[in-house]
Image (cartoon, rainbow, N blue to C red; front, side, top):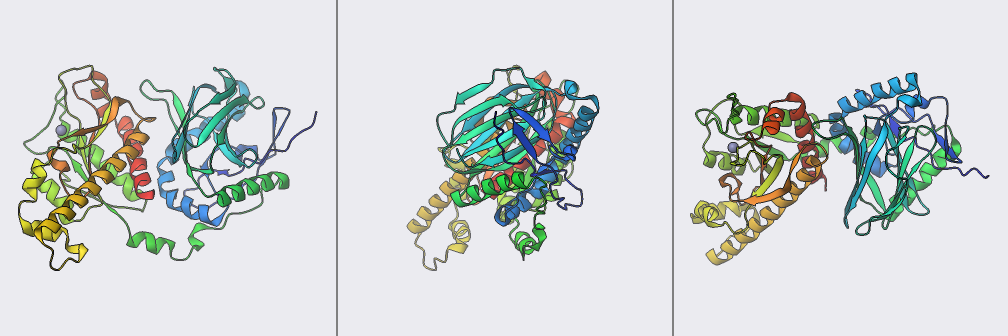
Length: 465
Ligand SMILES: [Zn+2]
């Protein structure tokens, strides 16, 4: 039998706290379904993506701080990996399930695992595909080819490659690249998970990367050190100058405690703890300025919360809540945007013509007539609603694999705080204090970290589109 050389899987490196990129030093050949891993095999799986071409270096550089969010998980994964190496293949987990979803612009692969494990991926030119490998001892589901149908992924193939590797090959109907990939620990009713998000890219960039992957394999040593991203002139400066402002609004406060658990833990405490964690994560990315509408246990009027977002020209307003519901069975996170039809409160806010003119200050309309102003305000409002919906969609998309969400997690309602005509605004219901399982999660720092990381990823995706 003939052994076919497959592109190397060497773009995964252990994340260094100093953010320096260690060049890849391993390659993998797949021969008769067997994986041969060269000496430095401990590096072959674990870690964070490093792209080789400059354009993608820049993209990944932008994502780097975000990737730092999952550093903790990666370290857990690395430890599991070391343990696996010591104890042998028998100790590796198995794949429980694989799901692929795809639209005209995005796609996602989710691999359910018994335990966290290492992963890697590679671009293939003929046929156009992205292969994702997970270090596992086998599958609890059937191998084979599966149609996906709609969107950018036509089908996928699932197969065991050797004793310690399962490969999912995603066949693309258009060029795509991995936008982000991360491993989640088991939590709640969810198993461990590998999540890989894909977005469109140009054919040229795709085929360049595929050729590079193949070249790396043929070379075997993987000696090509990526250019350090900071050598891109002005990158940091530009990023700093254009940093979006996120205003996080922890619901309730002071005399207004909000909802309450049976043992007396108040919503206002939960929302503030979550807001602080989310602020910390977003600031750590270096990509955002982040403010809180209250940083303490104090009462803030709803109007003041809205006004804070508008006065500071926030780029995103995100209100945090954890309410109760009559039905204790209702549980899970959801994200609200304002109901499209509910214009009455907004009209009240815009009652004074001066407000409208202020609002349009950036539009250079020295002699704007009221009718024209109204039309423009209406257009602006519609655009903000559209932006709010897009932001909410990204956040829901990231919450889904991480925490329990409601059956229809993307929702609309007439929340007062979502009325800014000039600030994309969303309301995040973390869960329901009226549900015992949710209440337990809502006071758990581990759940909070996990949910906040998902929301931070969603926000980063919204601003990175
Ligand atoms: Zn509330």
